[in-house]
Amino acid sequence: MKIDYARNIALKILYEVNTKQAYSNIVLDKYINQNRDKLSNLDINFISELVYGVVTWKLTLEYIIQKYSKIKIKKMSDWVKNILFLGAYQIVFLDKVPKSAAVNECVNLCKKYNYKSSNFVNAILRKIEKSDYEEINNINKSITQTSLKYSMPEWIVKKFYEEYGKDLATSICKNLNLKPNIAVRLNRLKPEIEIGESGILKDFRMITGTKNITKMKEYKEGYITIQDEAVGLSSFLLSPKEGENVLDACSAPGGKTTYLAEIMNNKGKIIAWDIYENRLKQVEENAKRLGINIIKTETHDATVFKEEYVKKFDKILLDVPCLGLGVIRRKPDIKWNREESNIEEISNIQYKILKECSKYLKDDGVLLYSTCSMLKEENELIIEKFLKEEKFETINIDGEIPNGFSKITTNNMVQFLPTKNHDGFFIAMLKRKK
Image (cartoon, rainbow, N blue to C red; front, side, top):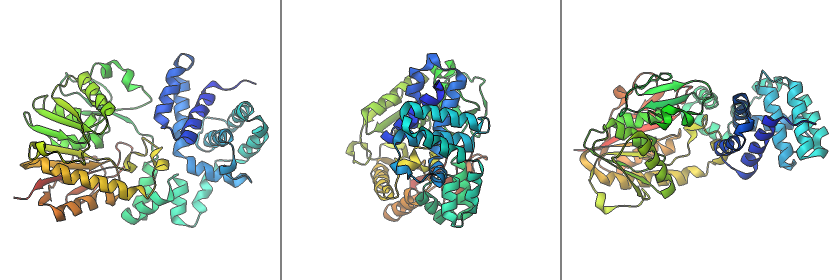
């Protein structure tokens, strides 16, 4: 019995992700680096497809598997469960893998990890067809149908329905499963290079296909940075000038911070905070790679008031911690690691950061609040509450946003909707009332 090497690695990764709550991207990188000499680019692409595919579609796969199994998925051994996920994903969602190959390889894996269940795995996978996915359209309850069709927890679907209506919520769920292109930002401090296709913002290029960007010469030499355009838009809109004092209160890993420095032509001063010292090292490493020397990192909790910085900054960027629902297409683990009960806790942190950091803004300064999330409790409601309590007002930024972003604007606050070209994101810019 010969075990398929790529599928075996994919299974080991999924085992860690689904049983130890490890992050799929971190475990994937670990296993690929450990086995790089034994893997072709085709193998690496296939492993990535299997891992991200199963993590993305886990809820739907559970539903389909359970149709044919008298044993509840919760009662199955972890190896058997993940082997079934692996097989069901290939059968239902991959067109280039013959069903016989998917079944046979998964049975072989089961013989290696849980021999006594190999007949069970064989029987279940032989019953699964692509039509099982199409039959989800026949489910009458709308929220349940959307949840299973796009493998999204029901509580998230329900929140999207409430805030965006059924049609737009369904579109959002669909887009959050799209495979994202990789966007890179050109370093303004270096000569422009030819790479990828033009993005929406002038500094961005889109890279198609599977590439390890961090291994590229252009990345190592500081000509490019990996960054989604919606994320980069916050720095672009804040647009600090040369010589200004800027605070990035939640800066790690430094993508927005370094973009601010590039926009400033590396002239001025940026204070970069993060609560964890090791994450600030990422900011420092990115700055060094890009040739930036105006960023000063400080380990600090942005919810804690700092007297010495009152009214010291011309511009403040608050990309606050959030549930991250807008980046699910890039980090599918998020939807399984979040709960509705997290909303109140995270929104309280967000509001406290906004409240405290607003004190550091000069009278004629500008503050930008952003999240990579999609819920009003993290976005509009935070800003509305703040405006009622503080003498601030929103700035109309609609005219400053280049065409090409999918967005909804409400009272000068902009919610960006996820598309193939960019993540979901929220931005509001504030200034003191005169």
